[in-house]
Image (cartoon, rainbow, N blue to C red; front, side, top):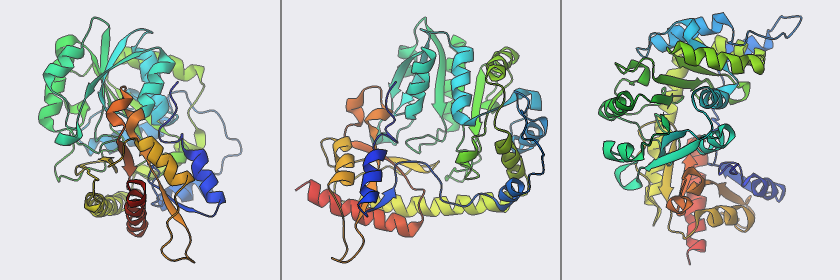
Length: 392
């Protein structure tokens, strides 16, 4: 089981804080925006006498409201085609367990969300990667590269769109090429679409659930964590029109009994009547993106493409080993604007763990622009000063 590149340096960050250092957390996609008031009110006003098990598939009322939510993006599904899970993480793991036997292979564009590799280990699945590059903004690799990765053991392709960790948004043309590969080899297409609310190119979002001709192949994974700033309620969902997949996933859901009761109450309260909230969050993240990416690219030796979705980017640094640099930031470096000011540093996620070949991400970091603009301004200043010291 690989260590998380997002959390593995957490003990060093904790030690820095104990020394009185202010740490700017760019390492993790934990939104700092408030959870919708409707959701917090629902949490505070729970009037149940008993916090009971919920149905293994999740409450029908939540699944019905989710159907209305997906309809806004052109996705027509029924409540029976939605299974509620303990976060998007469980949704992914249960999908792996339901669709892939030990020794089966799955193709994943890299760099990829590091936990995909962990879920594959847990399920006994072999990951075959196709590599995207920072030079072309981490666009989806070519059809030829996907075809070369297909073997007799290949069962699925997994994508994240918009992408974590790169912020890349796959175009309709890219998705239709992927659809043709999936249909040609009769593969599952597992699509992590938790960042659909954060698309910055002004065009409507195209879900894999809307790709024609592969209704039985597509399995969409979703979560309320990011769009409602509800990471801690642990509510995700698996959405698929494939009845056999749903039946198998439900067996795993019954084995773990039920998804979180309180989380479902909070999630259900978030879906309707929060359109203004969603719009304000989108505008805030877009402003943060514009400010932060411009600031990164002004630092000598640092390069980041402009992400078109989510709230992450992968940036290259002028260092030989980004993990050593990220650890040094927490153990040996403190920035003080004046001798009397509070010492500051930055925490980032080294990118080696987002690649199957760690060497490919050795000089890269994933950063999340989930802090307010003033904190992002300070983080950029600290990073600039740190690189000047480190690269002497």
